[in-house]
Structure formats: structure tokens, C-alpha cells
Length: 234
Image 1 (tube, rainbow, N blue to C red):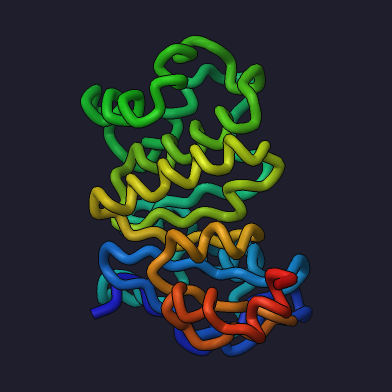
Image 2: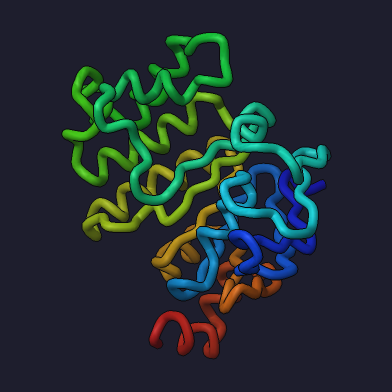
């Protein structure tokens, strides 16, 4: 059984439909990516999943429960964690305060959970009392992921995690996402760096002009000459 199942999903803003009739699944422990050109609707798809865009049709189930009408808080409580694109930390709060904010759906933050996040991202432990707004772009992205992990989600959803990062930081960040997945957390990531993410994911979906293609093994997509010419310039 799929951990996440999206069926016939229509998403937009007001009467403007941006993503139409999308079908997507993520199995327990699987690593899935959605790739495609800028403006195709990738972030809108994720925003729709988390109730931050208008759900215009279709259904979403998570761990066997219909969550189509759940808001973001309810989805986090159900076991999903989201790392949004862009401004995804509280700049005036310290690193530790940001992590604590990630547990707003829980009764407190167990110290061992925070310790595990610091073990995963040692730079955050070194800067625990520093304001998040003073961190580098890569450090802020690590903090955003760490905050999403505070609730120990079954599925971690990331929206363009490499956006704006230097190439060496991108590799480090992707390595950390790999490790999170290897420890049993399913991952769904929207990513502009298609070639790099497909080298790491199990399956990939291609979203173009609001239409989501069928999920295919990531290796198969990378070997597809038409896909490479259209999306990788190779």
C-alpha cells in the first residue's frame, strides 16, 4: 500500500487551475522526485497537498486515511513534514527556537530528538543560540529540514531544497537527504536540478505545463534520450 496516494488532483488559485488531474504515489520508505521546467506547477502541486493552494478536485490519502481536506497542521500531525521553498525559517528566532517551533503539534520537544538533529547537522549545534537570519543559505536550509524532522515524520516533503545554494553545498545537502531516506523516512522532493536528484531518487515524475506524467524509475528517465534532450540539454 502506498504511504501517499494522490489521485486526479486539480490545484490552482481561485478559478485558475494550474495542475490538472495529477496522479502520484510514494511508498513507505521510497524516495520520489518531481522535476520539470520553471513555471510548470511543481511548487503549486506541493502547496495544494498542504492546503496552501486551492484544491479544485481529486483526492489525497496518507497512510490509508483520506486527508484531502486536511490543513497543514493536520497533515503534520498525520505524519508529513514540509520544507517549503524560500523564506523557510524564522529569522529573528535562534536555531534552537526554530527547532522548537517545528514541534508546535507536539507537547514539547524531547531532548533526544533535538540531539539527533544536531548529530545530523553539527553546524546547527555550533550555532544553537545564533539567530536564524544570520545563517548562510545552506545552513538555513539545513535548519528548515531539521525543523521538519522534529515531528519525526513518515514522509518528508521538500520544495526546491537546492534553490540558491552554491554547487558544493548542494551536494552536501543532497547527501543529508539521502541519509534521511536511508534511515527509513520516505522523501518527496520537487527539484530544479533534475539530473542530480534523479541520480539519487528511486522514481521520478515529470511535470510540464500543469500535466504530471506517469512515475518512472529514476534510472530509466536518465537513460531516456528524449527526456535528456528536453530537460537536461544533453
